[in-house]
Image 1 (cartoon, rainbow, N blue to C red):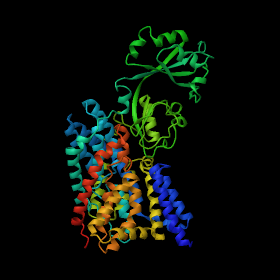
Image 2 (image 1 turned 180 degrees about the vertical axis):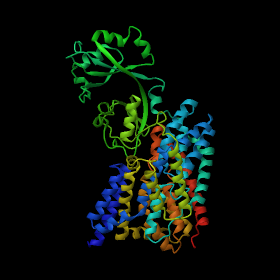
Image 3 (image 1 turned 90 degrees about the vertical axis):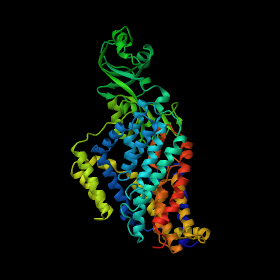
Image 4 (image 1 turned 120 degrees about the vertical axis):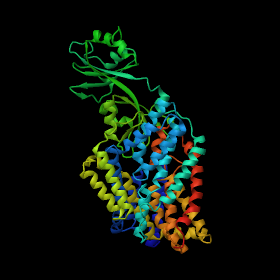
Length: 597
């Protein structure tokens, strides 16, 4: 076997393993993509210099800057203003709430990354559902779908568009304009809205969120902390033989010794003088119990405990974010009680409640955790672990002068892109710098806001796509498609390109599909002898049309666990929408972007 043949086979083997790894979730998509980059170098499919060329692509830099721009809008309070507007005008009727929610989500998602839009609206929607009696499961899928539809309206509305635009520019195609996609994007949004309101709404399920399944939201716990005095009869005894055994309905959550939380099992803990013990007492009648012959006073008299403080303990839901250090680790390894003073009561994944024996469950992005602890403790978890609190509205960012600055920077970016002052990548970089220079966003916040996992995924898949082109693998696929459909009209081939993009996006990352298919689609257009623009647009919209599964698009993954959905809910609602938009695209793309210029 000669070297070129070996490299061609190796590239196809790598591609097959990558797709399988994505589908089976053997590792994070970014790790899989980086492994693919390393593999194409090791097999010689790409030289080191050729592999490093992928880092010159402007798309990942643009996407990183858009993350920063979105974070600036969020931290300045701009998105919170939109959330407050939604709360004021949404009303209590389901139809009115849906229309208001979808319009606002789509409008915001057209110009900023749609993930923070969904993150901000999630707790607002859940809170509204509780106060109005509406079911969150009938609101969250429309929220995610509207954010996806809004993202199709502009070049910067979704990272997929930016990736494809960056790749095709490298092959000599002219850059897309900021609003070049808007004409079809608005039709997409209108069709999608009508479908959801008239048809999809009838298919939306009624599901309970995790905290509703376990207990009512109003049922709270209280914490009280004590210090063990030197003459207490507890000293020298095992914790499980004293407090836990003798006081009904009481749990010990934490023991601090000399100010440090003890990291050993409470079952093996021997009490020492001056230990500070954090207790949990169940029920809204805690304060009444303290004024009677109840648990706290009995314990205080009998064990010589000195009360230090009491705090309300709340039950809250939160989603594991895409950049969280929780991913690929178990709850047992993370030691939440020792690190944060909170307890994990349940894990919710793919419609399954994992309350029992979930300590060894390896966490994934999108898992919903039910945690209990003080508000301060849960906020620490949220800040440090990309843990998105959804059971009640998150802490809002104050809107003031920074909101005006953030909105002004974004408006300047949009206008600059519309009038093509400089390329989009340059404008995005300037907008990100402006967010930092004006103090709208702190450097640490900017670093945390960037989806580094998405960038690494893009770089890895760009390298694999480049390797397929260099070894002739991409041309082989083009030849196969042409043998099957070459005798058909360009419209049929365009329909195949769109459908292939959409199906692959439902199974693996939309960004990975965009990077892989771009050179193949350009080859198809060249083989047909027609303008590549219609096929590029078909790929852009196909890669964004992810409605049938909760794994193809990040916003779907977020609302999947939060709404208590099942996998089949997305298929039942999303497959008809995918097919409808497929027909719309096949009909309108050749009208807006003719095959022959």
